[in-house]
Picture 1 (tube, rainbow over the protein chains, first blue to last red):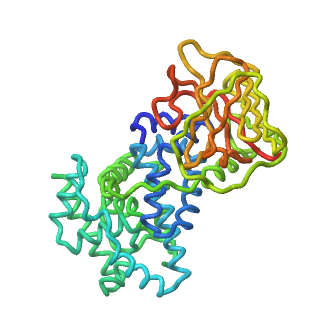
Picture 2: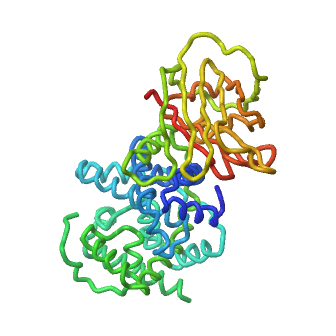
Picture 3: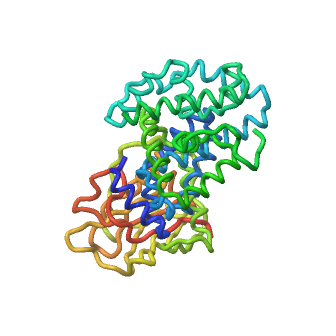
Length: 182
Length: 234
């Protein structure tokens, strides 16, 4: 993968409609973004479809990148992650309750990066602060980020009303923020 | 997940709303309202960017996965459509069809640039492409038949202290594959290795980039793409 400045430059040229820069950006980042889509969707055909949608979105909205203050890879991964989660929610709303059971089974058996060692100072900060939360709170935050779980999914997993789950997760985010601000 | 027109009642600080936005937990109407606020509230925008960078390392361990080459081809078709913004013009000049569409396993391949005057192999599907750019003066005409690619530089000079390198995209592994550093002659013939031949197909792209002497130090192009053209059956 190319460096941050390379990706930033490519995004600038893509924003101007530079087709060759777009190809270069695709070649440099598509494996990571496909990995993210695949991780959330766990279905190659759907991930492939979403990846295409993601890169079209990048092509059309690269000019918005500079306004948001994200680092370039974070922005690209965010676009991919959000698109994959949207697809996941469409799939689940079509599948009805059965979809939730599928999801729970897949997630409970699939080894994930949640347990992998994380390096880097920003990384250590979030890892450290997650360990300060109790396990259920930390797992919920990771599940939301890495698996695209919704409030509804969390409420069903923990068997609590939706509003209770919202209040509980928001409390977790506040605790996390307190830790991160220290 | 029904859509509402107002935020739910539970009050929470902006930092929590920003985190929910980054985590993609908001329902569509709350999400739109939050995005409208992002456009006008710099402090909130910084809060959102801060959470995005904070959570980002959680995704570092997600393994990369190479997408199938057809995604790249489809994207090229999409962004090449008339009426969409683009700089590089792709004109298709193509005849006939070639070979099967089976994907060859990626292979390290040698590459032979044949001396001029070597007989082209006999009958078979013939492909052509014109490589151009709106940003540079370069024009190349390419034709391909039975494993031999002929590339003629119609306009543009070899830059001083740099080499020109020809690429096919997608190649067998999905990304661009080098077809070799171009000799300075205006017309060169390139023997495309068998493992790559099966990816010389309509809608694939030929690209010429400028690279350090000896060619790109990486698997793909590193310098400016000077001209690009789509192989098609137009």
